[in-house]
Length: 238
Image (cartoon, rainbow, N blue to C red; front, side, top):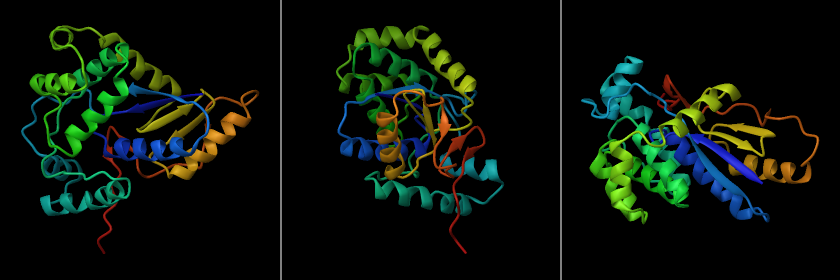
């Protein structure tokens, strides 16, 4: 069985969705291959952004900085539930294209899953600049990748086509936001849905390997989804 996950490294719900998928996989009794696919929430984002997360949210939604901070509280609560300590105070907005290219290189070396986790943690927990080349080199080295080869990758355009292919494929599949999970090209799960949804779908795919129409929607839509317009963060303040 294979699960393809379209996600971006600056998408908080992608991190939560990854954790919820992992929880479901821990209970699943069969072998599953997981492949993370590239998706850029903002392909036009600058590498060095002169605003923090709250300022960007304030600008996007026309709110005050304090209101923008309140918008992240729900995400932080969901993160706590799955063991993620979101640190939006120090998260650095940036362009993620090179991080995606680096992950494609890591896939060729068999360490893409570890690197994906490291990049998400670096951005959301450690407050590191994952658009910065020195940061990417440091994270790559920690994943056991050859620094000289990584420098060559980042200095050139290698793996750009692979990233663009993933993004093109997402458009063909009708992906509107991430995280977006495709299981055996039969079922699609949109958003960071509860582990139970993943568990039921995994069992269903296992039992119905033949004759199932492709990409049937599962359990409707989740509001825990990031797209080009931002993350659907609900403000619980009354």
